[in-house]
Image (cartoon, rainbow, N blue to C red; front, side, top):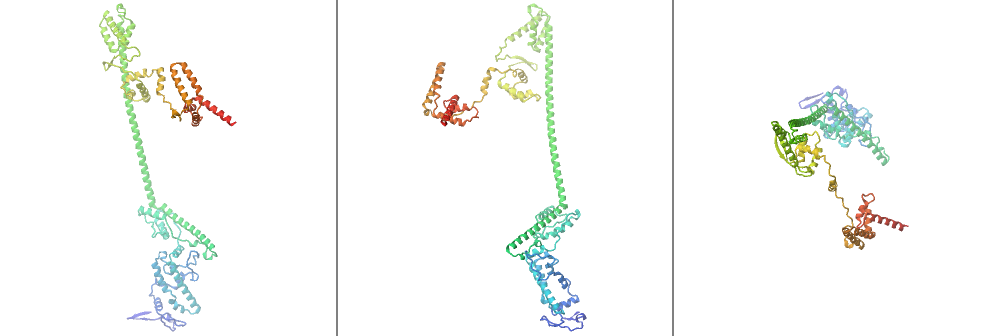
Length: 631
């Protein structure tokens, strides 16, 4: 027990320490050889403080704990290399040796150096000399000495390994790790289940610090970054435990290379499996993530809204198009109805006019019946009918009004005068074939007006035919539209009359051939390759033939006998073929094959001064000459 009085520290030993035996005190010098001795110096002070309970438990490392942390001696341990395989049971815990078991892979280089200095100073063999000398037997002292040295060597090897980045990465890869991944959980426990899994696997990430899962309030952009990071995850984890072959056991260089290739294949397979494990973890989390599910629901709802809006817009367009069609149909029906009413009114007016005309004609016949027997006037029923047919309703009404107030000879005289005036008008009409049109009185809106009728030309008739085909029956205001299509200011009455008269006329056969010649396209002329040949280079035979042919043409104008004689002369001279004509024939036969249209006409046109028969005869003679030479 230690008591402090003033500036002096008095140390008293209990009976457990003394045990009634002599106490030997020594300094830091070499220990005194004695069977029983006590630690001195710093070791004595540390031992004394430990016994009285003044040292902190965190700073005290018992020998038993250190022994438990050391699994193998330094003789069995060798530095980790890629070519050697060691069982996990025989591998010592380097972090625990340096007092960094609570940090492990998170320990920094400064922390490792600091812990090494403290541990090496504490477990240095020189510091353990007192404990070694305290053993009773020589064997026990030697065993404790060997154990102390092995422990110190293990601490040094642990420091060397943990300060080497490559060796430390291999050692951290073989450290104990939970490879299990969660597969299913409830939505409320998602972050509790998957959060630690991502934190645990984040130690293997090349990029540090790794992105964490977050919570339910994490923005969706950060969530996307998190999953992008983990879907492109890159690991630094090594798999030396998967290597089957120990490179130190290779007898030759080739065997060593083969072992390296086999180990590399096994490590690569293990690395692919680990990537697949990380990918399955990310996939499971992505499927169960409530934030992703909410976004999917929002996107689905937005997509559904866009689809509904698109369908509504399309429906509105269809309804608008249907409305326009109905509107156009209604307008067309109204126009057709108005046109039908107008046509019906016109028809009624014509029927009424015809009825009044029949009434006036019957009235004229009735008034003229009593005076038909009067001989001086020579009135007949045929004359009365002619008069009824020639006069219109107003004229008939005016005549009947005048005749009705008369009796006997006066009535007959008026009828006779009207009949004579009608005959005179008929005699003034032009004969058939003349284009002169005598103006006839017409009634328009109750007024009588004279108008010259314009004859129909060929162009108007063609336009009328095309207009009738272009605007068939059922077209609204058909005849007005056809009148505008013709464009010659023809009235509807003239067009209706022309459809019954002009369009029904048969074409004149005498002018059919002339119209055919006008419409026929000119036939393409085939230019002969020798047509541009200079006349001065022509052989004398061809020149003579051309002169004789020109002479025969001039003689043909004078008499038929001279033409026949000239033809005989030309025919006799045309049997002679020059080299130029023969060459032209051969070239034409090559140019126009057998399947060509109008072959011989083209060939004859290409050969100057020869016709079709002469070309055929020349070809036959050329074949015979070729066969005779071949024989």
